[in-house]
Length: 93
Image 1: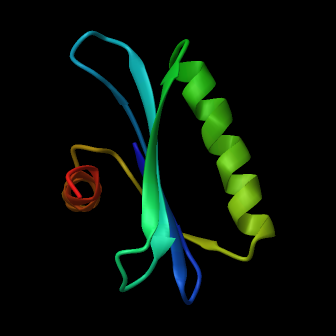
Image 2: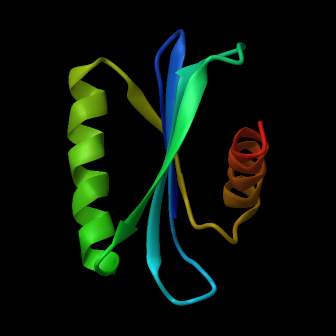
């Protein structure tokens, strides 16, 4: 699952997925739109339910900061795959 929030200047992107060992990973990227500023963090979760709780918390935080949800897609959809490519670019930076 991929979820992205944006304001006029900032973005936050969350990717929830299982790695090749079956562990649940909560990846969060953030930064300023159109710049190289930002960061990337990966968190290992106990299970999928924990990642969904973290996603709910993230949504509340971003709404309180004035960001709006602009994307919610499955990782295997065209939109999700495009967002994952962006996340992969950040991971290699």
